[in-house]
Image (tube, rainbow, N blue to C red; front, side, top):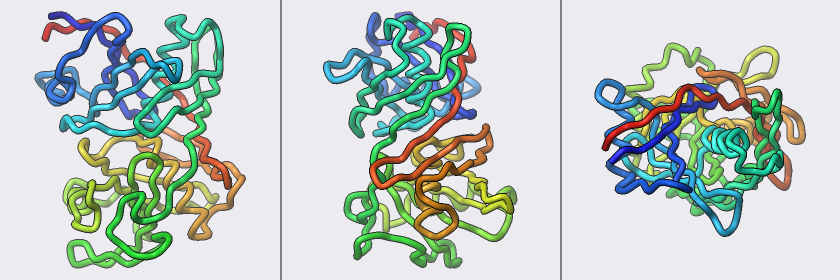
Length: 281
C-alpha cells in the first residue's frame, strides 16, 4: 500500500503529515515508530493525521515517535492550518478551526502570496490544578515547588495546555544540560502518572526566555508549542513576565510569541513545508 505524505515543521518540531480525507492510514501507532526513525524511515518527531471532523474544518491526531498518542501539539496545529489553507481546503478563509483531543482550537492565519506563513492560535485556558494536569501533589497549583531528581533539588511549576508540562527555571546555561540523561528521569518520575513534558528555561537580560524541552514519547525536540505556552504561563506565575503582554520564547528551532490572559493563552509562530513524498507500507 502506498501513502502520500508531506513533511512539515514549526520551529524545527517536525512531523510527517497524512491527508486522511482521501486515504486511510492503518495502525498509526506502529507507523509513527517506523517512519520517525531517521535512518530507516523518513525521520521526525512523529506523525499527524489530518482527517474530516463534524466539529471543525479538520481533525488532528498526533502520534509520537514512540507510538503513543498525544492530545495536542502547538507547532503541529499551525502546520495543519497551513496544509488546509495552502491546499484550498478552507475556501480562502484565514480563520480555521481544528478538532483535537484537547478540544477545538481556532487559528488566525497570516497569508503572503497565497501561502500561509504564520498563525496565531487560541490554545485555550491554562490548567493549573494538580489533579487535572495530572500530578500527584496536593493544593490548588504547583508553582516553584521543590522536587528532587537525580539527587538535585529542582523547583517546578506545572501547567497543562492539553498536554502536561513541568517548567524549571535555571540560573545555569541550559545549553550545557545533558537532557538525554536528565529528561527521562522527569518524564518517568512517579509524581507524573501520565508522564510529563519538561521545559528547562533561562531568563535573558531583555526579558525574553530561552528553553529546551524533553517531550514525553519523543525525547528532546527542537520546539514544543504547548511547552512554550506553559513556559509563558509559568513565567507569569513566578513573576518573570506579565499577563496580557507578548513574551518571546527562543527554542532551538526558532522563536514563538506567547501571551497569557485570564481567558486563554495565545501562541504565534511560523509553519513550513519541507517536502512531499510517497511511501510504500
